[in-house]
Amino acid sequence: MKCKICKDKAEIYLRSYNLALCREDFIHFFERKVKRSIEQWKMFTRKEKILVAVSGGKDSLGLLHLLGKLGYDVTGYYINLGIDGYSDVSQNKVKEFSRSSGIMILIEDVRVSWGTGIGDLAKKVRRPPCSLCGMVKRYLMNRAAVEFDAMATGHNQDDETATLLGNLLRWDKGYLARQSPVLKEKRGLKKRVKPLSFITERESAAYALMEGIDYIMEECPLAKGATSLFYKGILNQLEEKMPGTKSRFLKGFLEYQRNHPLIEEEEELVACKRCGSLTTSEVCNFCRLEDKIKS
Ligand SMILES: [Zn+2]
Ligand SMILES: [Zn+2]
Image (cartoon, rainbow, N blue to C red; front, side, top):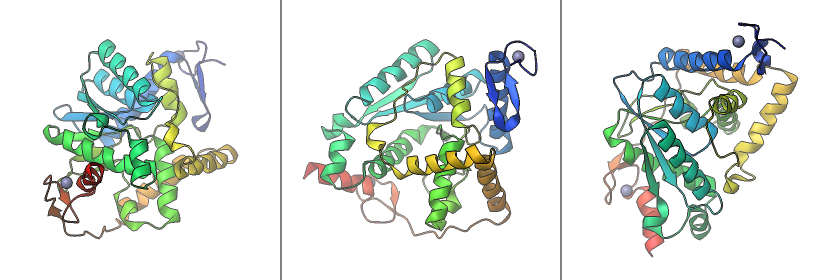
């Protein structure tokens, strides 16, 4: 197969575009697509300071690499969650990336203050690890973002469609109202952006590979059996039968949401007695978790 643009040997075929591309033209295609999302959704400008959450995986490291390459003011942020056989490997990938790219990455390790990892903790407080992990990451990320203008994450189109499906199946209006590639700064939370919202998992993996980014390929071992992975599987089956389904599903929702915004019911927020972050209860979820660890 030949590249549609330069007629050299094609490295990748993109079925939903019926497009074959060589390495160079794919990288160009990919970067233009992300840049267009950033501009169309008015995510951020080159004057803003962006904190990019990285896990050591292809999406987040690819995003940090790409934003640096496009000249945005980026810093990475990595949280070591103390997951056996996983966190230390991912931290090494992150460190190596920082060293070779020259992009600064802030590193936090939950074991320093907790003395244990997120897996143990989830057992102790009897919560599903993924929901606990999500809460902890949101809290720490928000705390780290104080001196930045926006927080960016590497969620791709496959992640976003799986989340959308889950939210729709539960008719979770609060989450649906907040599902967007960009959330403005609001109620103590920094602006949150997802520049890879319209990039497929496969495109993201190909980009990281072609740009020579060394990333952790394994999925988080605690995520085994997670509902989000089940939804991804179902969506992949749909995509297989009807190419373009995932993209139409997500874009259709966002288009509808733009014209008929779901109004989020806003609970009153108060400052957490311990840490001062805004919360719906006297003491925030994160501080309550820390209380449990200490007791
Ligand atoms: Zn080409
Ligand atoms: Zn608190």
